[in-house]
Amino acid sequence: MRLTTFLPTANLTIEDRIAAVEDFTDHSFRDKELVELALTHPSAVENQPLCSYQRLEFLGDAVVGLCVADYAYRHWPQADEGDLTKMRVAVVQGSFLSEKQREAGFDQLIVFGASEQSQSARGMTRALEDSFESLAGALYLDAGFDRAYQWVMSQLEKYVDPAYIAQSANPKSELQELVQQDGGQVAYRIISEEGPAHAPSFCAEVLINGRPCARAAGDSKKSAETAAAAVALDDLKPH
Image (cartoon, rainbow, N blue to C red; front, top):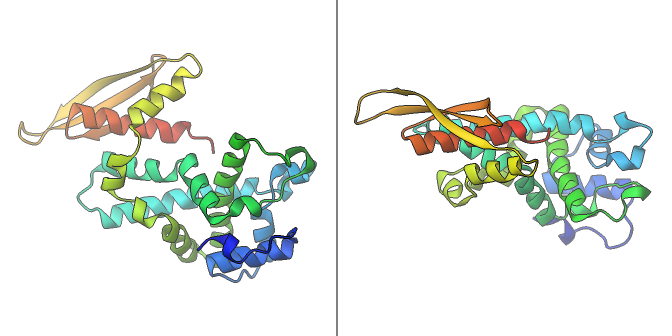
């Protein structure tokens, strides 16, 4: 469902926005203020930071991560830690969540202050990501984890799949590009090798500017390095 299928084109009141979110999530909030918070950009309440979605986004980030991790663990019992990490990282990355919100039409619902009325593309992308996580946090507080899980996975379920991960960007390339933006360097090293020759297990460590920052395992040196890069990306993701 896309929000624009039932949103009026005129200026929306906060009541209109809350109703749209409730229709979209198929949940009637007991605490309507949670929805209002989830849609309020910090620029709209510059002198009242606790009245924006920032605290909900903090909570919702953890909720979304747990939902995806739980789903991946239960539905892919043969996946090792590295594969599970790659699935979670690929799905909860900011650009992916923001695109899901954009597809749904949430760019019409977020309440911005005057200083942010003409959002840059980058600013809107971040706001949409935050709105996804904030809404997950609001659902969690209003109705518990099961209800939040139901909504989050209704949006993300089909993407928590190794086949999708295979089509997504290479974590090593993504990490390299991210670190190089600040003139940094990325390196990898294999720190252990275990198991029989026919079924080895490697543990790789990724170093940024010479400092170890993440480890992960895989059934080959390449897969271990890729998994370690995915963990590093997850750690570097803004929260």
